[in-house]
Length: 407
Image 1 (cartoon, rainbow, N blue to C red):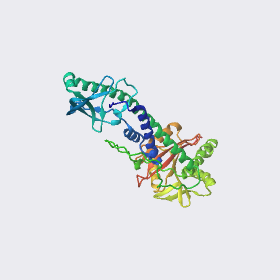
Image 2 (cartoon, rainbow, N blue to C red):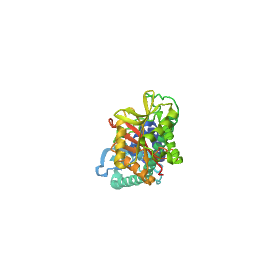
Image 3 (cartoon, rainbow, N blue to C red):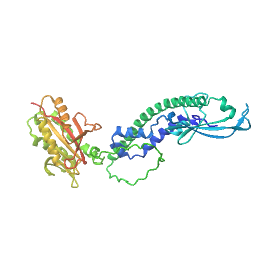
């Protein structure tokens, strides 16, 4: 005799689904997880493993009959022979995962629906003798089993509601965990003074078996225009350069008279002195690069390592023009740049806030790099910009404000 909702524990199935979800995330390329829209991917992965309560279609129940001998039993369920009768197969169409009709939910009664199931129908089978045909209310027998099925589907629904919430919570945390691990590895590699060889043909060690689904959810693609610049070994050196330049803030504070009346060119010279002390004459000023002369340029082996512009704060219009000027210098291969803003205004904190908000108004602005850790005791932030001539190529700008003392 067949029964529904008692073949195996639903809890075990749901736990297995959670592990399948994590294995699916494990398969993803780390760079994909870092750069894809987090919310879109979370929705995609949850849709892939979300479970919905099956439904039955009582409006389209059909009955198949066959007049035949039916087996009869005594009170001890021992066969006592065959008698004339009729076999009925009540076919109940359903939609949803067949396995959920076989799983036992966390709540259940002592009785289970007596029915079988195939890929299209729940099948209630009745074998009635001719005497039982007259005595039994067949409709009530069928309704009893249907009522039990509905009760169990209600139990299943409650378990699935908890599962789907847990699925989203665990997916969110696991994606974050994988991204954090990738960032740790990238940061470790950045700290090493060696070139990294990428293995583009690396084979996956685990394949999730294909599961037939009625609905195929579209995996989100990385928007290359919004893609974060790929981590490079030069990032460490970039941060070192910014750190060296940030030390000028302390120098200005200690010797205010020496800087109070300096112009942009003189201030730039002081930065060049500091940088050349560290980079053995590789830092130059007013150097041609792309469409003009940039204030500060550091080269290494004929490759630009760092480009910077130095400007006094003269309001929004001039600052946006400075960004335009920097964009004109940046070539396809340049990814590390800076703007040093000299502020003579009394309200330095307010000006720093204005500089950051104005930067985001530029048409090539992409986003702030919130993970960037500014040098100690400096007013700086880092952001991502689109290249002027190729919007799919992005680069960094670190903006640092310096307070020029009033004497």
